[in-house]
Image (cartoon, rainbow, N blue to C red; front, side, top):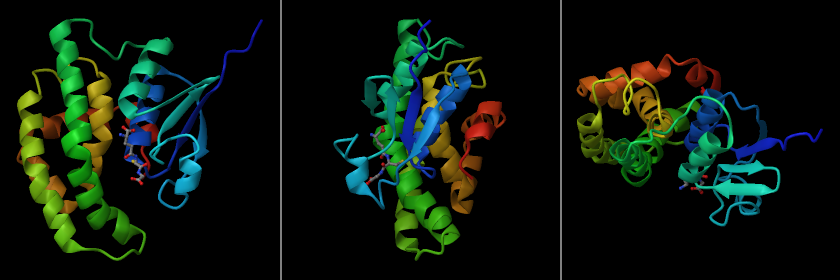
Amino acid sequence: MTTPPRVTLHGYQHSIYSWAVRLALSEKGVDWDWAEVDPFAEPERAARRHPFAKVPVLVHGAFSVFETVAILQYVDEAFDGPALQPTEPQARARMRQVQAIADAYAYWPMVRLLYAQRVFRPRHGEEVDRAIARDGLSQSRPVLDALEALTGEGPYFGGETPTLADLHLAPIVAAFAEAPEGGALLAGRRRLKAWLAAMQARPAFVATRPW
Ligand SMILES: N[C@@H](CCC(=O)N[C@@H](CS)C(=O)NCC(=O)O)C(=O)O
């Protein structure tokens, strides 16, 4: 009998995208090994597996994949466990739409501008720039509005069970809500706030959160 190849996630402990992958692996019930790479402190090391010197990178046997959207799809399709993607075309389009919003519009202002300045840097004794935080907050407003408009009736974006959209987005919004101004802005979006609470209550979320 051959041993199945191991899954190794090359990520950074504080990385929001690495958290999204851990969340998906955990929801699927996949066992993984962790390889810590700090892309900010050791960009040349990160560049050995990622042409843009970022994390996460998932390695499964001889196969290596970067870009969270691709990693999440691979995790869902390569392993047993609950399906994390709908089959119906419109539901699939909505899922990808939320993932694309997470990457293109949410991550930078919500995480790299607001969360970094208001939570991460003070927590690590690093200098803070309040103007950057303010900029992040104002750029986050239309993103929250767009996401609020895309929430549905169920607790998750796709209905009764989480999909890749929820797993991709939850770490970003959770980090944003850690900042007092972020939490206050989120409180004005009732459905999105309830969605985050549903995600935060999931055992996989609790088991994988970095703080
Ligand atoms: N598009 C990439 C983004 C990954 C990304 O930005 N990762 C951050 C950590 S959360 C990173 O490695 N940043 C290093 C840098 O920007 O130099 C993905 O979806 O995986």
